[in-house]
Length: 114
Ligand code: 5GP
Ligand code: ZN
Image (cartoon, rainbow, N blue to C red; front, side, top):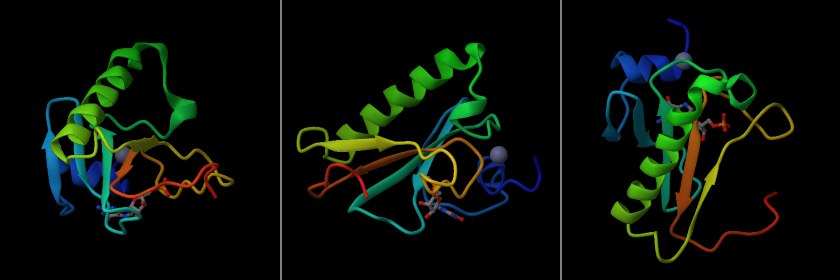
């Protein structure tokens, strides 16, 4: 997927402020942060979004949540609270079609989301 922005970040062809990486996932700071902590966690594997997650991806998705929890601890927002958000499709405002989990925290969040 050479035209995919986030595959470019995984491959190191596009610069990003990477805060964590392992064989399966990369986490980096969002370029347009919506909260004091705003990190994107993505699988290295190109998956277009929630609708494209397959049964074999179960362990990968579980791992992403474990990484989100560890990053929340590292960023000091585990106790104060945080959100892990995935946008899917037009109504949710998905703009990048490589599965990504927004880790947001460091301020009071509104509910329901806008
Ligand atoms: P979505 O709207 O698809 O849920 O989220 C896409 C996110 O990717 C947005 O929060 C946007 O700010 C972020 N983003 C878009 N392009 C780049 C980029 O080149 N680098 C980084 N670090 N984040 C990006
Ligand atoms: Zn991709």
